[in-house]
Image (cartoon, rainbow, N blue to C red):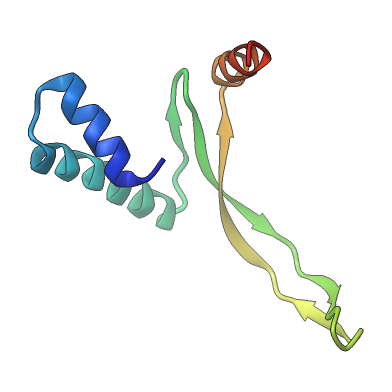
Length: 96
C-alpha cells in the first residue's frame, strides 16, 4: 500500500477531499519525523511507539573483498508495534 492508497482510503471513509486528506497525512509524517529528529518518543496507544535507538560502533565485513570495516555508531528510528496490533495481525493472517 502506498501513501496515495492510504490517502484514497481515508478520504473515502471520512468524506474529506483527497487534497485535505493528503495534507493531514503529510502533516502527520512531518510531525513524526521532526519529533524523532529531536530524539523524542512518540506513543500511539493501540498502534505502537516510534523511538530513536542508538546503535553502537561495530565491525563488519565487506562481502566482496572480505575486508573488515568499521561501522560507526548511529541513531536509527524504530517502530515497535503494540501487543493489540500484533495480535490483530496475527489473528487475521491465521484465517488466510
